[in-house]
Image 1 (tube, rainbow, N blue to C red):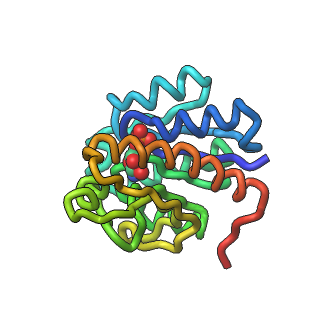
Image 2: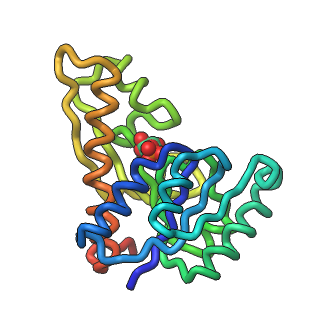
Length: 193
Ligand code: GRF
Protein backbone atom coordinates (compact mmCIF):
# COMPACT_ATOMS: atom_id res chain seq x y z
CA UNK A 1 0.00 0.00 0.00
CA UNK A 2 1.13 3.56 -0.71
CA UNK A 3 2.56 5.43 2.28
CA UNK A 4 1.95 9.15 2.51
CA UNK A 5 3.61 11.66 4.82
CA UNK A 6 1.54 14.77 5.46
CA UNK A 7 3.40 18.01 6.19
CA UNK A 8 1.55 20.60 8.26
CA UNK A 9 2.09 23.85 10.14
CA UNK A 10 -1.35 24.74 11.45
CA UNK A 11 -4.87 23.60 12.15
CA UNK A 12 -4.63 20.55 9.92
CA UNK A 13 -8.17 20.48 8.56
CA UNK A 14 -6.83 19.02 5.31
CA UNK A 15 -4.94 16.39 7.29
CA UNK A 16 -8.24 15.59 9.03
CA UNK A 17 -10.03 15.28 5.70
CA UNK A 18 -7.35 12.84 4.53
CA UNK A 19 -7.63 10.82 7.76
CA UNK A 20 -11.43 10.79 7.43
CA UNK A 21 -11.27 9.70 3.78
CA UNK A 22 -9.02 6.83 4.73
CA UNK A 23 -11.35 5.78 7.57
CA UNK A 24 -14.35 5.96 5.25
CA UNK A 25 -12.64 3.64 2.79
CA UNK A 26 -12.16 6.37 0.19
CA UNK A 27 -8.38 6.43 0.38
CA UNK A 28 -6.51 3.16 0.00
CA UNK A 29 -3.25 4.34 1.51
CA UNK A 30 -1.44 4.67 4.81
CA UNK A 31 -0.67 7.95 6.46
CA UNK A 32 2.59 6.73 7.86
CA UNK A 33 3.96 10.01 9.19
CA UNK A 34 2.92 13.59 9.93
CA UNK A 35 5.60 16.27 10.00
CA UNK A 36 4.74 19.52 11.74
CA UNK A 37 6.95 22.57 11.34
CA UNK A 38 5.51 24.04 14.55
CA UNK A 39 5.18 22.52 18.03
CA UNK A 40 1.89 24.37 18.59
CA UNK A 41 0.08 23.19 15.47
CA UNK A 42 -3.35 21.72 16.24
CA UNK A 43 -2.81 19.20 13.46
CA UNK A 44 -0.41 17.38 15.81
CA UNK A 45 -3.36 16.55 18.09
CA UNK A 46 -5.35 15.32 15.09
CA UNK A 47 -2.48 13.02 14.09
CA UNK A 48 -2.02 11.71 17.62
CA UNK A 49 -5.73 10.99 17.94
CA UNK A 50 -5.44 8.94 14.75
CA UNK A 51 -2.34 7.13 16.08
CA UNK A 52 -0.13 8.51 13.35
CA UNK A 53 3.55 9.06 14.26
CA UNK A 54 4.46 12.75 14.31
CA UNK A 55 7.80 14.43 13.80
CA UNK A 56 7.60 17.85 15.42
CA UNK A 57 10.11 20.37 14.16
CA UNK A 58 10.75 23.84 15.58
CA UNK A 59 12.19 27.19 14.57
CA UNK A 60 15.70 26.25 15.67
CA UNK A 61 15.64 23.16 13.46
CA UNK A 62 14.97 25.38 10.43
CA UNK A 63 17.86 27.75 11.14
CA UNK A 64 19.64 25.56 8.61
CA UNK A 65 16.94 24.46 6.13
CA UNK A 66 19.09 21.72 4.64
CA UNK A 67 19.84 20.05 7.95
CA UNK A 68 16.15 20.40 8.86
CA UNK A 69 15.25 18.54 5.68
CA UNK A 70 17.96 15.94 6.32
CA UNK A 71 16.33 15.23 9.67
CA UNK A 72 12.90 15.00 7.99
CA UNK A 73 14.31 12.82 5.21
CA UNK A 74 15.60 10.32 7.77
CA UNK A 75 12.09 10.06 9.22
CA UNK A 76 10.57 9.67 5.74
CA UNK A 77 12.87 6.73 5.09
CA UNK A 78 12.26 5.22 8.53
CA UNK A 79 8.51 5.26 7.86
CA UNK A 80 8.85 3.97 4.29
CA UNK A 81 7.17 7.04 2.85
CA UNK A 82 6.36 6.97 -0.88
CA UNK A 83 4.83 10.45 -1.30
CA UNK A 84 4.86 13.70 0.63
CA UNK A 85 1.63 15.73 0.70
CA UNK A 86 1.96 19.24 2.07
CA UNK A 87 -1.18 20.57 3.69
CA UNK A 88 -0.62 24.07 4.96
CA UNK A 89 3.11 23.50 5.47
CA UNK A 90 4.69 26.93 5.81
CA UNK A 91 8.31 25.96 5.21
CA UNK A 92 10.03 25.58 1.90
CA UNK A 93 11.05 22.05 0.98
CA UNK A 94 14.70 21.99 -0.13
CA UNK A 95 16.36 19.77 -2.76
CA UNK A 96 17.38 17.45 0.09
CA UNK A 97 13.79 16.15 0.03
CA UNK A 98 12.82 17.12 -3.54
CA UNK A 99 15.71 15.12 -5.04
CA UNK A 100 14.95 12.09 -2.87
CA UNK A 101 11.26 12.24 -3.89
CA UNK A 102 11.26 13.38 -7.52
CA UNK A 103 7.73 14.34 -8.65
CA UNK A 104 6.48 12.91 -5.37
CA UNK A 105 6.07 16.04 -3.27
CA UNK A 106 2.57 17.44 -3.61
CA UNK A 107 0.99 20.67 -2.36
CA UNK A 108 -2.48 22.13 -2.11
CA UNK A 109 -3.00 25.81 -2.80
CA UNK A 110 -6.21 27.76 -2.16
CA UNK A 111 -6.45 29.50 -5.56
CA UNK A 112 -6.36 28.64 -9.24
CA UNK A 113 -2.64 28.74 -10.01
CA UNK A 114 -0.86 30.45 -11.65
CA UNK A 115 -3.13 33.18 -10.25
CA UNK A 116 -2.76 34.28 -6.64
CA UNK A 117 0.42 32.55 -5.59
CA UNK A 118 1.69 33.09 -2.06
CA UNK A 119 0.51 32.86 1.50
CA UNK A 120 -2.62 35.06 1.23
CA UNK A 121 -4.23 33.58 -1.85
CA UNK A 122 -7.84 33.63 -0.66
CA UNK A 123 -7.65 37.22 0.56
CA UNK A 124 -5.81 38.33 -2.58
CA UNK A 125 -8.39 36.72 -4.86
CA UNK A 126 -11.26 38.19 -2.82
CA UNK A 127 -9.77 41.69 -2.88
CA UNK A 128 -9.07 41.45 -6.61
CA UNK A 129 -12.79 40.91 -7.09
CA UNK A 130 -12.47 37.78 -9.20
CA UNK A 131 -15.73 35.96 -9.79
CA UNK A 132 -14.15 32.53 -9.96
CA UNK A 133 -11.27 31.25 -7.87
CA UNK A 134 -10.63 27.76 -6.55
CA UNK A 135 -8.17 25.14 -5.41
CA UNK A 136 -5.06 23.68 -7.04
CA UNK A 137 -3.18 20.51 -6.23
CA UNK A 138 0.28 20.60 -7.75
CA UNK A 139 3.77 19.19 -7.52
CA UNK A 140 6.18 21.13 -5.38
CA UNK A 141 9.48 22.28 -6.74
CA UNK A 142 12.07 24.77 -5.68
CA UNK A 143 9.96 27.74 -6.68
CA UNK A 144 6.85 28.41 -4.64
CA UNK A 145 3.53 27.46 -6.24
CA UNK A 146 5.06 26.78 -9.64
CA UNK A 147 5.18 23.00 -10.03
CA UNK A 148 3.13 20.91 -12.45
CA UNK A 149 -0.60 21.21 -11.85
CA UNK A 150 -2.25 17.88 -11.01
CA UNK A 151 -5.85 18.97 -10.38
CA UNK A 152 -7.98 22.07 -10.04
CA UNK A 153 -11.49 22.79 -8.89
CA UNK A 154 -13.28 26.10 -9.35
CA UNK A 155 -15.16 28.00 -6.65
CA UNK A 156 -17.60 30.73 -7.65
CA UNK A 157 -17.44 33.99 -5.69
CA UNK A 158 -21.13 34.78 -5.21
CA UNK A 159 -22.21 38.39 -5.25
CA UNK A 160 -22.67 39.05 -1.54
CA UNK A 161 -20.09 36.61 -0.25
CA UNK A 162 -17.84 37.80 2.58
CA UNK A 163 -14.18 36.84 2.63
CA UNK A 164 -14.92 34.41 5.46
CA UNK A 165 -17.63 32.75 3.41
CA UNK A 166 -15.27 32.43 0.47
CA UNK A 167 -12.68 30.89 2.75
CA UNK A 168 -15.19 28.37 3.98
CA UNK A 169 -16.21 27.48 0.42
CA UNK A 170 -12.56 27.03 -0.60
CA UNK A 171 -11.78 24.80 2.37
CA UNK A 172 -14.84 22.67 1.65
CA UNK A 173 -13.54 22.04 -1.87
CA UNK A 174 -10.00 21.37 -0.57
CA UNK A 175 -11.26 18.73 1.83
CA UNK A 176 -12.95 16.88 -0.98
CA UNK A 177 -10.33 17.40 -3.71
CA UNK A 178 -7.13 16.55 -1.83
CA UNK A 179 -8.14 13.05 -0.66
CA UNK A 180 -9.48 12.36 -4.16
CA UNK A 181 -6.15 13.31 -5.77
CA UNK A 182 -4.22 11.25 -3.22
CA UNK A 183 -6.48 8.30 -4.00
CA UNK A 184 -5.68 8.65 -7.73
CA UNK A 185 -1.97 8.71 -6.89
CA UNK A 186 -2.32 5.68 -4.61
CA UNK A 187 -4.03 3.84 -7.45
CA UNK A 188 -1.35 4.81 -9.93
CA UNK A 189 -3.86 6.79 -11.99
CA UNK A 190 -1.93 10.02 -11.74
CA UNK A 191 1.70 10.14 -12.65
CA UNK A 192 4.04 12.74 -14.00
CA UNK A 193 6.58 11.77 -16.62
C1 GRF B 1 -5.14 25.41 3.18
O1 GRF B 1 -5.99 26.43 2.75
C2 GRF B 1 -4.13 25.08 2.10
O2 GRF B 1 -4.61 25.26 0.82
C3 GRF B 1 -3.04 26.09 2.38
O3 GRF B 1 -2.99 26.16 3.78
C4 GRF B 1 -4.26 25.86 4.34
C5 GRF B 1 -4.07 24.79 5.38
O4 GRF B 1 -5.19 24.61 6.18
N1 GRF B 1 -1.81 25.71 1.74
P1 GRF B 1 -5.27 23.38 7.19
O5 GRF B 1 -4.06 23.46 8.13
O6 GRF B 1 -5.28 22.11 6.42
O7 GRF B 1 -6.54 23.60 7.97
